[in-house]
Amino acid sequence: GQQLNQSPQSMFIQEGEDVSMNCTSSSIFNTWLWYKQDPGEGPVLLIALYKAGELTSNGRLTAQFGITRKDSFLNISASIPSDVGIYFCAGQLKGSGNTGKLIFGQGTTLQVKP
Amino acid sequence: EAGVVQSPRYKIIEKKQPVAFWCNPISGHNTLYWYLQNLGQGPELLIRYENEEAVDDSQLPKDRFSAERLKGVDSTLKIQPAELGDSAVYLCASSPGEGGYNEQFFGPGTRLTVL
Image (cartoon, rainbow over all chains, first blue to last red; front, side):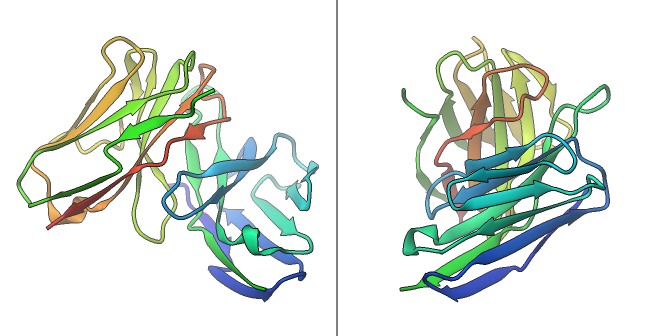
């Protein structure tokens, strides 16, 4: 079945540092999404990418949809303590035979040291 | 605007007992999802509803799990009987469009512990 490999599994960084995480897939996706999940809460959408090669920013976050449509990365610049959490990538297929189901990566746990 | 509401937030039961989770989606959202999230993993889809119709339940273990969305609004997910391996967070999400529109809004989840 479809699987997403997300790396790194965890990161422990100093406040102010930049962060990069990525996601790769054996399958082609039409949409890539990045979510953040805080403890005891559900995932919250950060960035959605709809076209291969698309580069999108949301404040200090930047994400790109890989040209091959099999990968995506998320960068966080100048990290702050509230960036702590678990970041998930998710890919979505569309079209006949698919229900638009989201396939999630395993998550990247980010810890920021003040 | 209120987000997706789930209850209870936490549930502890003994194995072989039944359990039910309730979800109220964002008002006007036609599509409702139930996800299972094991510790250290991303969510995995159990079932998706378009209004009151279950359009994708291929990942729902139908021998013990059941779900319903009778009036196309609230939904319940039931496990009977629960097993130790069912301990996880059960997330509900909703989205405004049909056909798997991708902006899904998640509730806080119900954390189930089976002893």
